[in-house]
Image 1 (cartoon, helix red, strand yellow):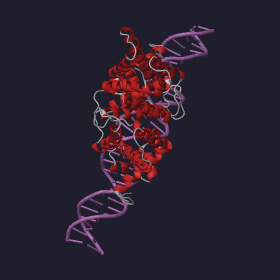
Image 2 (tube, rainbow over the protein chains, first blue to last red):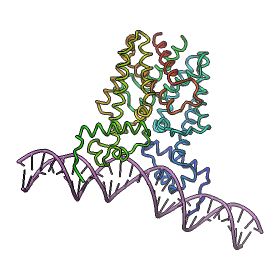
Image 3 (cartoon, chains in turn blue, red, brown, purple):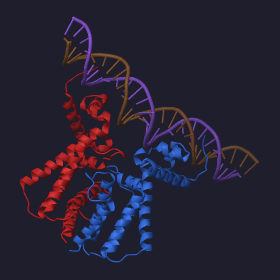
Length: 196
Length: 196
DNA sequence: GCAGAATATTAATCACTGTTCAATAAAAAT
DNA sequence: ATTTTTATTGAACAGTGATTAATATTCTGC
């Protein structure tokens, strides 16, 4: 058999991404395989490689949408209930937690993603990350004037560290309360430290 | 062929762990496979499963030794040049960075390890982690009195977050300087915040 | 409307993965 | 010396990602 053309190239891409998102949400990224995805799509494995370079490339696009989703969540929620001053950073952190709690499997897929030794993430992907970092930086600028970019990166990395260890249950004896407790304590304490 | 008995069960375990450590250090954890390890050991794949439950179990023991190594590094270095007051936490953080920089591949293998949905890490492993957390808590108690355990976890997670994002080059445009710069800024700022 | 070029899709193939297990040979026990 | 026990092998299994020749369909130019 051959050419069916029930889907255009772009439709196929979108379908693969959507199917992968659903699969990860349902079974986790560890259970994912190229054949399962294309099977679920109603295609066979070869088709995947016409649309994406490899499975990593597909996952990259899934992660990109996850980043977009976080950004959208932050922006719509901030528009809905704007905050002032120090509360803005707190809001940012809880929106992060909110989103990652809503999509734990997708977020884990993103955190778990590892770049090969030599390869760099593509520019368009890097831009999505730095876009989010930019939001943090912007809010941070209201609180502090020096080392904004460094502090933003530390906050961002700290969020991911807490989030990862929490969801991986790597927190030997889960003391310290819920994820949002930890994140809130982290952000509040760190901001306090920046200001002195 | 059969029974050779050039190695006891315990020797075999140690050999497998050592071989895996060497392999990971050389090629990274992603390239690891059961056959490569046993081949390098001078055995065939079946032998591995007599000594470890599966590849994950082997990796667990490798990670355990990595944790032991970090602990040993911290303890010997602290004995060699003891610090006072706020400097002790700073020293702890830079010993962490020092060790993870000395063994980047092994540390990545540890960070990258994911527990299956249902399975918990074994108690003896959890104790190694909480032992390290305990060191942080102990040093922290000199600085602060409330929420020590929570703050220790946040610091620990923060270190891992920064460390992971740095070594994975996930820091869109690597601003903010070296890993030790970031870690130092993180710890110092956070401690400052705790005290107010 | 039709011949020919272009291409989307399949299915087979390749080299690999982790895990299991019957067969076997050597050591230990009797 | 014979039997029991067991460490080790190597083949088998079901899966993985990736490649590619074959093919059936759509698209293009006339």
